[in-house]
Length: 271
DNA sequence: ATGCGGACCTGTTAGC
DNA sequence: TGCTAACAGGTCCGCA
Image 1: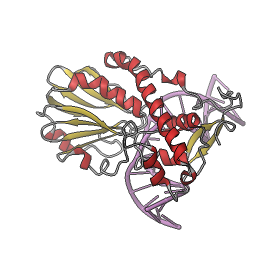
Image 2: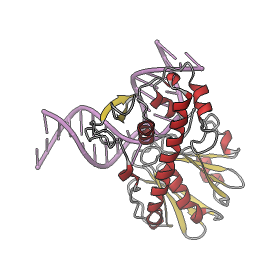
Image 3: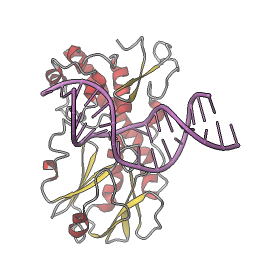
């Protein structure tokens, strides 16, 4: 679920319900996420008011006067607004209980997600300080990608999925953007022209923005607790479509492995 | 510095 | 139908 558009959708969904609310307590049923949740969270966050809900890459930041909670949804994590005290299900690991009778509930079957607490500016945190540019910002542009990629042999797909280069482009959107730009996923990043990067940047932003717009459809249910998937799935061109005819040339879409991840592409349209 | 493979987990699906 | 293996939207870390 959590690609950047999903995280942004989550942020927009929860922000109105938790901004300006005071945290009364934190219930940690299972602290064993990707990193063990520190007991400092329990000691320091209750009593604090959440002033801002922001996002950096796929990290969500809940900022208070004393410090910030840094949340990552991993592969299978999700957040919901619930009535405080609602009975937890199997993978409901953490509740951040608010003073208005609601709670923010973190659910994550695979526990690849994480939750940190820091009293310093969150962008200085070890996990955030070396992140690459935001893909929807002006810093993500052809000059930037072109300059960073010179001399690099890494495949373009892995290059744009590297969070130290650009943060938030996951497996689905990497496949989709490369298809839309007509770039062969295994092409060395250092061999791609600035013009091609221009196109890649443009379609990357397009696909992410469209997905956020489609994710918005899920927003309402989100808070009500239905938790439906976003509707962007219907707009995918190559991801998960091995063997299906390319929408442009009818050639069957191929599936290969790159760095232990599935890559989908059209062998005719992507060179 | 770069690149690769392993690691962390559970649930679902594909294949025999 | 049932068992097993492979795979899943992420990304950090250690090693070559």
